[in-house]
Structure formats: C-alpha cells, structure tokens
Image (cartoon, rainbow, N blue to C red; front, side):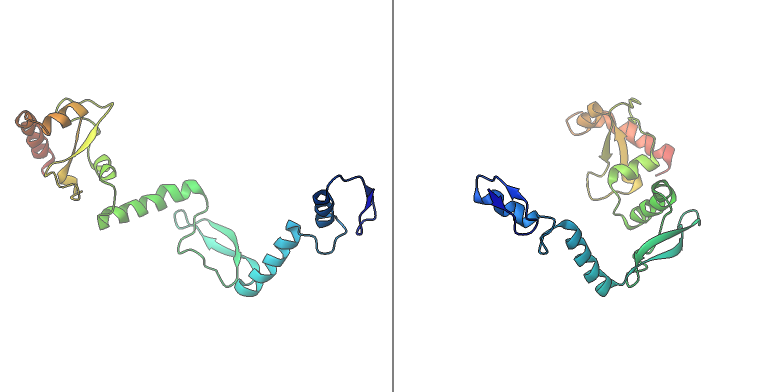
Length: 179
C-alpha cells in the first residue's frame, strides 16, 4: 500500500509511474499542473500586456446595426471593419472585398468570368461542365474581354488543329458583348 503525501489516501499501485501520476495530479498538490492554473497565469500576463477585456460598442460596416464586442483595451479596435453576423459580412462586406480584388486585378479568373459572362459554352450553349478560356492565351491576362466559357469539347478543339472552327463563334460572341 502506498499513501499519498498530499491527500493521505492509500492506494495499491503496481508501478512507480502510477504513484508519480497520482502525486502530480492530486487535487491537494499545491504545484499541480492543471489547466485552470495555466489559464489564470496566461490571463494575468495578457492583462498586463494588452489590458483587461472590456466591452466596446461598434457599428456593423454593412448594415450599421450597433452591437458589442469584447476585446482587450490596448488592442481595440482590432479590425478596421466589424460585422454583426457572418451573413452580413458575406453579403455586402464580402461583395466589397471581391470588388476591391477585381479592381486590383487579383481576383481569380474564373470569378471574373462568372461575374461577367453567362455560364454556358459560347459555341454550343452547354452549361453542365464549362471551362474558362483565355482568348489571347495569356493566362495572366484576366480582363473580362479576354475570358469566355467553353465546354470541354470545344475548349480542346480550340487548342487543336480544329481551332479555326471555334474562332468564328468566339468573335461573334465578342461582337454581341461589344468587347
């Protein structure tokens, strides 16, 4: 039998590691490595470095609804824009961010094409599986007028010896779109 020096209960442990584990995690051990003490210690450090947690009134960037955020004093404002909900952030805020990306030319070419063209092959009108084609074949040129949708068959035809059969459809589409 083994008696814990912290709680003074008796245990029938078979190995010394079982004794050490009980001793380390005993509720009465003043040096116990529990997560509560670690959290308290971490919060003390954060309070000293960044200030205490405090409620701040902010307005939603999208809908102007007022709401409260809980942040540390020295970190507020943590963000340039606050949103009251994910749906609010994804609607106007996300839209504004996407517009900024488009303006700077950093938007994904597929996103640019989907925003500005009907999602169907310009040759046959197929809509189930479509690919984005760069007309001038420069893949870094993601201008609206350089992108069109083609189905996989017509895209392959364009990049083969049958290219001349596809070009008239592309030119007609560009004339209709006035590019």
